[in-house]
Length: 253
Length: 168
Image (tube, rainbow over the protein chains, first blue to last red):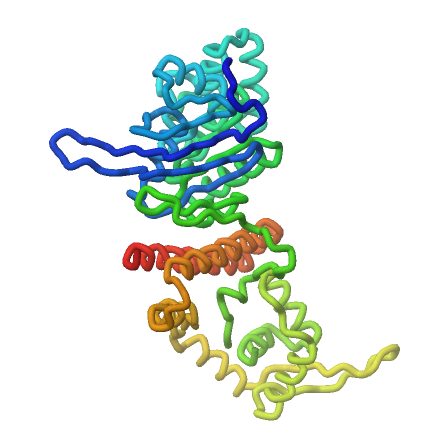
């Protein structure tokens, strides 16, 4: 594989532009010139109002959408001119994606949903089984292997989707509103798991409108109107005393 | 502090330090607790106004301790407290005054103010998440208290988004 920047960041984007052109409607500028760098091991949240273009940005980084202009490097490879076949291969081996509505294959078992990408990436059936079992165990899904997605709760389905995204040990995990259709318990669970994988060095880009989810990341990018409005590293200052409930709510009586 | 202490005494007599512990157990570590001095001062006032009665109990190895019990008037005060509806929290929003006045001074940029405030809220949110993770899962009152603070912050952040949309 041709690597232009072997030791560079996981993601580098320069001047990314994407305008949606729905048939018979006015063009919608979604991403309007984005420069972005994500280092190995970072946990970055992209947040902003709906319609700000944050999901489009994630789609560009995962090759689910192609930029109109701009350059994109993933793990050192210049990928913006890749065609679908090369993107598919890249996603299979290097990028895991989790979606709001899980996007599991509904007529495959949980086990097959997770093993399929491993097999497609060239893993032996035996290795795929071992990796799948390990991940499902880690995600608390042992015993659910033979269920179909429809038999699981939303939170469980999202954990299966997370296992599928991580089974090929991707260098980048993209998560698009992963708790957007979960209740508060499922949300906490997803957050806990993202934080755990990040703790082991997984690079994560999370798109969310939920500030509670965003604040789990080390870095929050505020996205407005197709552009980066702010890019903040959280928990940076050591001399700031940690905030408590009393900084937000005063209990009286 | 007055009414919570009175309410705690409804379930039985206690001395100052026991009341401090009861408050700590109730609210968890997320909320800063009154120190024992503040509690004794408040108990003294409650006693003066006849809402509680104190009685010194001799201890062989330590100084006497004062045990407080609630009076009938105290009971009535607690009942009246629960009876009346509670005003919504008043947010003291100094930030909004800054945002509103920034164009008049010409020294501060509104979008820069919003970004700075968002960073502050996100850091607070992060601290609260850590508090929630550190707090005993089974202390439902403490967990709800933290969740309440987080939801307020979420509203503040949503509102910043609105400010940004309007002002950009």
